[in-house]
Length: 283
Image 1 (cartoon, rainbow, N blue to C red):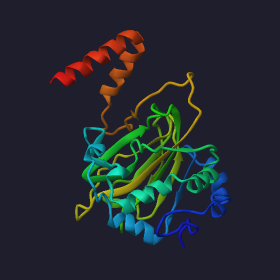
Image 2 (cartoon, rainbow, N blue to C red):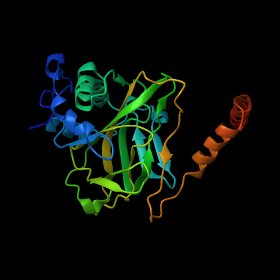
Image 3 (cartoon, helix red, strand yellow):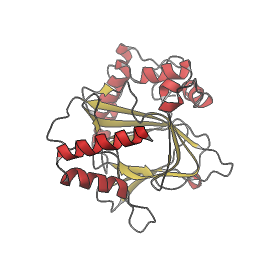
């Protein structure tokens, strides 16, 4: 039986009544988990719904300028498909994931109240990592600038049939100092991982995908926020860190950019940014 047995398998909607208490039974274990609050739930969605998402994976209706592909040392052979580029049925499922009853379940489970969905789906949607690809250990960006809200929760649903540990792509959870790996989670079909998103929640799938039939690693990625951002917090983009004794590479581009932001007065920074944008338009 699916964990979300209260979810409609066709629409992905949950009635407000059925969402009232769903998830509360997992909250204590979630909050007390190490190295940061998280949970792993197998058979999360109704199986029919998870299968429909997989069957329609990345079926596009255009708008490919919203999709993003990454090819660098920290993110290799990764593509993110924005929900607004997907076919209508799949798009509607993502809108259901942003609905109030679904948010209520996530609030019950995590204990984080007042969750706000992202109508822009910044960084969210369908994620695919192809053969040889990986995502290095990192903490996610913490500030949704257009809405001025704070990122709080990641919810990932994996869509990989018959996936084995030796195929790579495991989600790893590490402590903030990158001294210890606490969990290595195989991204099997309909497995959901939910965790608190902070500047110290180090996670990633650093082991390259290595499927014998070159099948890609697929997942749904959803991010939720709260209206708790204030001027005392420092906004940052994705923060990559290296694993001890590994061949991971530092993200010097981001580190140098942040150093510049710390040292250069804001007025000079703005003028430099305006100049760079004008030069880019002139090319």
